[in-house]
Image 1 (cartoon, rainbow, N blue to C red):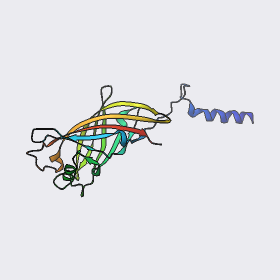
Image 2 (image 1 turned 180 degrees about the vertical axis):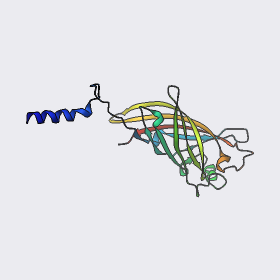
Image 3 (image 1 turned 90 degrees about the vertical axis):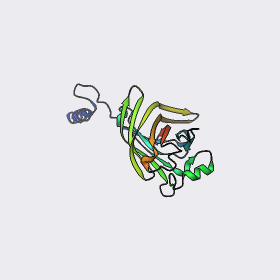
Length: 201
């Protein structure tokens, strides 16, 4: 009976140790982080007749980040931006941008981005390539991103693992079939993103 018990103990210990006697490292899986819309922001800007460079904000942000801290290149991000959250600060302009002249929100109510590749750039830089869908058209876009911070967020009794990023890119609206008033309003649209995501529970 003693020999049987010893054999069972020895067998049970095998997975916990490597061949050289060291404890086998536990695999750390990528974790899902939900985007926090109250601390995230997507803005875009354009040139107006050469005189000014207005900006607009997409206030409603939905999506998640699959974060692999051991290897950020294995991470991914998926974002949905409902056009109902479009805000220029000028209600009549909001309405016009949502018409068929521009984004046609009635027919295409959301903008989406899904990453297809993540590359490291320096210590805290990333190149995030993905599929951007605007106005029913999908095109590849690369975001130049920076890791702001990954760690524990604490405020009073609230605690959560968090990750923050900034990113920017420039797209051509004509690539997505939005070319109205191109002679007066720039084709190039500068996009800036700041993103806060909390680990899903």
